[in-house]
Image 1 (cartoon, rainbow, N blue to C red):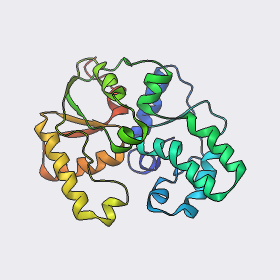
Image 2: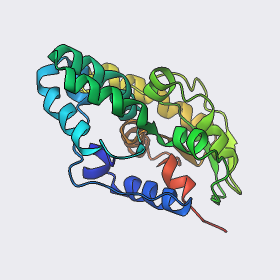
Image 3: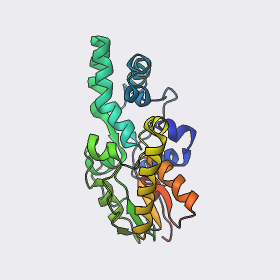
Length: 239
């Protein structure tokens, strides 16, 4: 599933995810019916508006062995929030569909480490990297050290610690719109931590967080760029 941001703003992340999975021998299909997972509506309390999207997801991805999402927040929504919408509808068929598809939804690092059982994906990326564990991947999904293990398996990559890495970057979807000043202040802290880490590249598994942090780094003219985990794992730079 490309996700909304992948489809509209960061298509290179979706393409990198497909290339990576295909390189590892996975038969990948991106169905035409894929749309938003409904997370923005659910997070903001608009459950009725989210219902058609949950139904669409259930129809579109019903027949796949696994759905890989290059986003911890979207994977978290499918796994944990779709059931809330389905049960609120009191629709037994939708509840059954959600119970079927939720366990098959995987954040990228989960799929690579837990399903494919790989940590060395054959990547090469000779740069100093810091990893930002995004809130949903960290707290809702509990991906733990899976992304770090994958990064440690990349040839030439030097992984450094990100100060106060568990702190939120301040994006939070609609939070960034409704609480812009607080969101920006949190993002500025995270941007400074990225600079302080000494990394050339800040990596995360959610394009939304990278958009927040990367925008603030760019405004500062900071010597740190942002990349999605999939882009690093598919890289053969310097190989």
